[in-house]
Image (cartoon, rainbow, N blue to C red):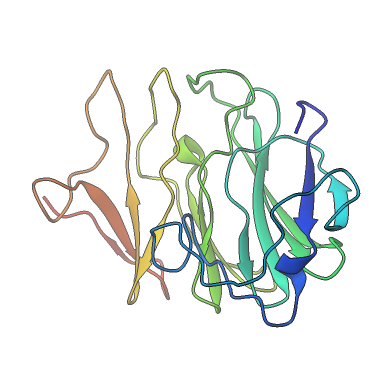
Length: 208
């Protein structure tokens, strides 16, 4: 899809009542695999497309699907506003939109790369990372449950693309990279430095 005229198009088969959820980047197993059968192999601007809606700003994340909702991120040019959208799976209608302002400068590959990380949902809440602008958790109706804006500044020539991972009652996020100061947070294991926040509350752990 062209930029900056961004749009979201949904395949006909992906909207069927039997289609499985896609709750995070690379799907339910994190492997990018789907068990869906008889999916379309070709499409055009009209063929095998159920609906298409314009988006105000571009985004490079994977749409996340849960039941009758689609969650999608977008960011304006320069990244001063980064958004999480919830759309109706049936017709693309925007159910709600949450905007996060970030006036500070964040280095990136280009001025349209400020919504690269995919959201993640467990069917009760959706967690999204906007890099230096913070990590946010909402319920499925768009009510903010908690946020973390103390995870450090992302500073890298390629920007940030780390998507949250939900595991039990934890929301795990790789914090960084920060070329000038090193990783923003050390994790629980030497080879993996994420920051982990309790999903149901504001409390969090950043263990050394």
